[in-house]
Image (cartoon, rainbow, N blue to C red; front, side, top):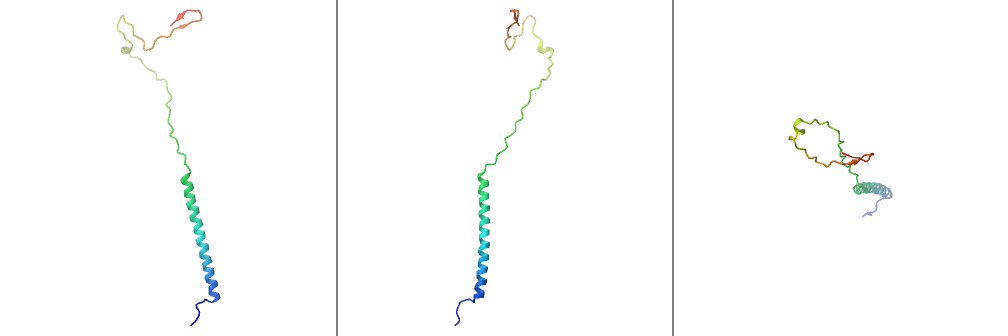
Length: 97
């Protein structure tokens, strides 16, 4: 019966094939690790959410026309002002309204 040992030529071929296979597997392992690391890094970084821009309406003067019924008061009575009238002193010392 013959021995189960392979000739030296076939051992070199097998060794070269195993080396190529190991190199390919290491490259795939490193690529997978880098992809996993990138996904983990992106998950931990906080993406700034844009703040909603609220538009502030600028007050504009709208001319109002007073209707005659809005200014009419019963005869002989004075309409009470919603805010009290402010009195101030003029430079002459007189109180004006």
